[in-house]
Amino acid sequence: MRIHTLDLRFQNIPGLIASYLIESGGEYALIETGPGSTLETLRAAIRAVGVDESAIKKIFVTHIHLDHAGAAGWFAQQGGTVYCHPNATRHLIDPSKLIDSARMVYGHLMDSLWGDMLPAPADRVVSLQDKDSVRLGEIEIIAWDTPGHARHHHAFIIGDICFAGDVAGMRLENSRYLSVTAAPPQFDPVAYGLSLDRLLAANFKTLYLTHFGAVSDVEWHLSTYRQRVAEVYERVAADFLAGVSVEENRRNYALAEHAIAMQAGVSEELWRKGEDANVTSMCADGVRLYCEKGR
Image (cartoon, rainbow, N blue to C red; front, side, top):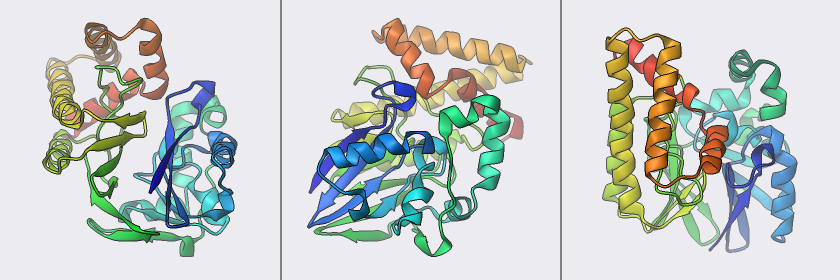
């Protein structure tokens, strides 16, 4: 088996969003496609490692947020099969609601950030239940249900390797700062903790993060990230109970995260880069929404 990390250079910035090309026994698969806005970059990256994109017949998406699955429909329209969580299938087949929701958030920046999300033909979308597997050449790719960031989230497992999507957070340039991926509307700290416990118990050798790249200090990463999820929830919950406004919550969240990043040795440049991939105001809103729902 060979794993190629493909940098999608989101917004022309390296090291923010990865797609993974898996090669085994003469077959090829993608794990994550990134957004529609980076489709041409992805296609060029595939060709650069000596593979024709028409040879990629299996596409796995951890969840249907645009930075992970925005280009999945294009591959399905070329004859590939997209594998996803059962609750993600309808959005891949008809992404109109997903696109409309994103457009409400991003407004005039929507197209430049995320590009098109094409509908996938229904017969090219296959849902996987927890522990279902798909054969690729000489290996099996196994889906693990891992909610917390989103209810429709899978991690994909190959032996002692885990492609973690967003359930293991964001870690740029192998820094010691772990940014909690908490975009609305489905952040759930309880489910998050259980998913991370499951990953910890598996003793993986390597994690592959969509944001960004391979992680070898797996136990430290997962245990520390579990603490970080609890930390951001407790902080936002305290502000919410104190009656802090949405804007003040966003401001407090950004200041606290910036301080944690600086203590971890992150440069201002890397901090700003992280804001391009996992905006603190968006994460503050995601955690607050959980508090507002009272769950």
